Length: 362
Image (cartoon, rainbow, N blue to C red):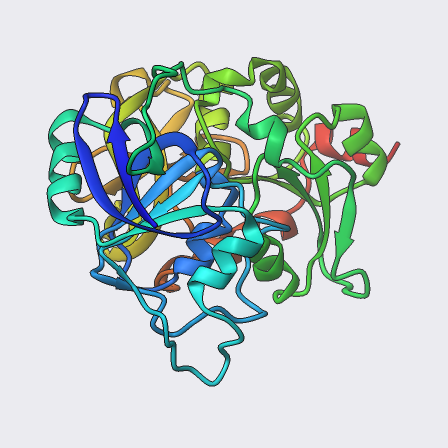
């Protein structure tokens, strides 16, 4: 069936619908990764977004049973130049069209993605519809919803690596990719994944050695209710923040965030570790950043994005807090930044401050 992508600025891009064919609405964003489309589609950070893949063919190695990053896809749709109907890979179990149908996602293929991405780069990400070609877009373009974290966070706590004897980590699920817990479990940690609404008292009862604030979708200022909890936890435990978790940590320390014109989304973004001078190629997926001028004296910027010099990481001057604006767990993307998990483990193994001993021991 012929279809079209209609942007809020009135531009229309025609193509062929595939997957679950129905009208789809969301924020239209683009990702520059050459591979990893399965992980991208199941990254909860893409909740209610229509994903445009810049690589010309998507689906050539099919869909496997191992690489999902969440219990389901929370995206709104997929836009590609061409989707592969006959994938070839020893792990492949289905085509990307079959996968979109199972996930209830509408895709559109045959789109001039180069022209589309140029529009998004020049005018910024914007709302859009995927609809059949003869379907009028008469509903207008309502404001994009701000309840993405509430949609993607786990409804109940669960444990990964229950038999591990290493540090016990509480992972706050703001839209966590499964690879974060796996990265910790592979290092011997026992990980308790908790809903984003979990209170400080509930965390204390779990007696963790450290806390991870995960990635997630949307504007970090849309969930102000979590900031007091984060502030209290920062006084008790070693902390690692990833993406949205990084932004929330910054807000909890008095910094501010701002929306990027078209975001950082892909697995080829260079980041410089200012502590060592090394540049790492990273996986990223975010539409907001911490503003440099708002970073307080209590935080030290440790990483910067090479492309635009925005803040890509910080640590606290006196507390065991480390935070980055990208995905050290990769999936997809290079694994060069996995050393950050080792830094976090080292922080947890340091002697506990008195305030942490007071609360963990109760």
